[in-house]
Length: 181
Image 1 (cartoon, rainbow, N blue to C red):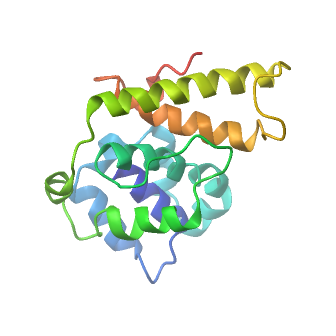
Image 2: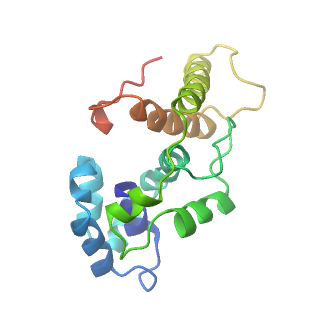
């Protein structure tokens, strides 16, 4: 929900998600405590400035949100690919799966259907191996398929892996998640 709030702050059209409603959503659900320091900075600045200064960074929230939502029952499993989240999946995630701005954390928890831990671990293992291959490719090794974009595709793999590793790291803060390969 914290990622949803930050993403919406920097991307949503003001008329569809007013600043007041977004701030109330964050306050009501204690989302400030779940935000990183950078997320808090983005969420506190004027929205047009957030879009301009952090638009590229905040856009990666969707890559994090996808596996997190999948672990909570979102139907579409993030496939291992070099592509960023497709628009149809992003729209479904934001518009249908994530709670509306008047919802509470309790509403969201009641709706969640936890995925079997073995499935989460299995997907994490796949993304761990892919992330390792991306890092090796960035060092000049031939470890990814021909044509794989190690910058954009590699970032999608890294962000999805970040979410999956965090899920499997109880008590670890988001920014302290171990992404070593």
